[in-house]
Image (cartoon, rainbow, N blue to C red; front, side, top):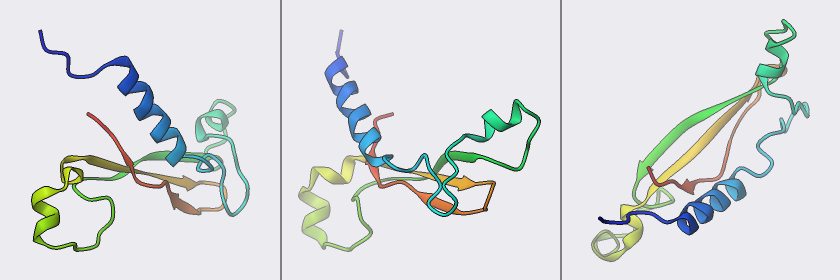
Amino acid sequence: MKITKTAKECLVEDQIRKAALVGCDKCPCCGEDKSAISYYKNGITNKGIISGTCKNWYGKKHETDRGILYYLFKPEKYMYYQIDCFSCLTCEAEWESDPYTYDK
């Protein structure tokens, strides 16, 4: 048997994800804070916030080139990063979360 992930590691990943998503559940333009599903239950189809994963990649956190030594020796290059995208159906605004690590 080989243990690949413990409960403590899962808890840390959830905390990192929650920290990256702080403030993303409210529209920065109109202040909408309900999900689209809560409006769908009442028969309204053009209000609320929808979300989903829009970007994910392996490698460095930011898109700056750091040279060949970075690619050879940094463990960060093996990490899987993800950004969640949000859009408001009420005012049609779009925004993204901060990048966070995600273990598949």
